[in-house]
Every structure is written in C-alpha cells, then in structure tokens.
Image (cartoon, rainbow, N blue to C red; front, side, top):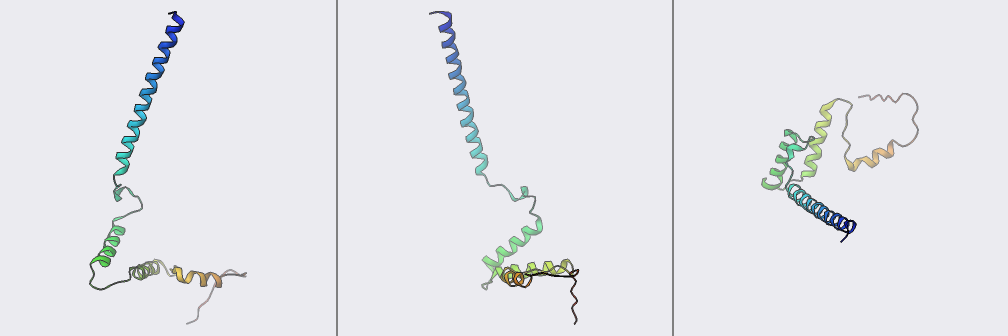
Length: 121
C-alpha cells in the first residue's frame, strides 16, 4: 500500500469516527431536551403571573368545583373585570364582548370638534 492510499483510508476512518461522535451528540441532545421539556414549567417563571392572579384562579376553581350551587363563572368574571376597571379612574369603562359590536356601530362616522361630551344629570 502506498502512503497516499493509507492516508486516504486513515482520513476516511477519522471522518467516520467524527460522524459517529456527531450522531451521538445529536442523540444525547435530543434526549436531554425531551427530558427537560417534558417537565411542567412552574408558574413562578411566568413574569406576567402574580400572587393575586393565582389567588383569583384558586377562587374561581373553588367556586366551580366545590360551591354548593351551580354558578356561571363567565358572568362572575365579567362582573369582577367591570368592577376592577371602574375603580381605575372615572374615564375607564369595561365593554363586554356582547356589547362591543353595537358600540362600534355607534362610533362609526365622522366626528368634528375636540371630542368632548357633556352629560347632564
């Protein structure tokens, strides 16, 4: 065997060995990713969740599962949202989805002036 042929064979063996290592690394990475990803991520990592929202979730879950009477939690949540928004300031208003279409229709068209409305009681 000449040196050139032996060198090529040695290079082919090294490439096969490198391919085997690469394949093993990819399989190991997939396995680790599966194990880590299959665990549920705790809610504490969610920056948009707070203790108060968790309290509300627990309350709604209790009402849905353990309250003696049947309660429509959707209407209950709507009322809570309305109360929260009303307490923000006198200009904030919660518009339920059922009323959004009719309010949007009333707002269609051209308006002139500075957009101030006066309500007389």
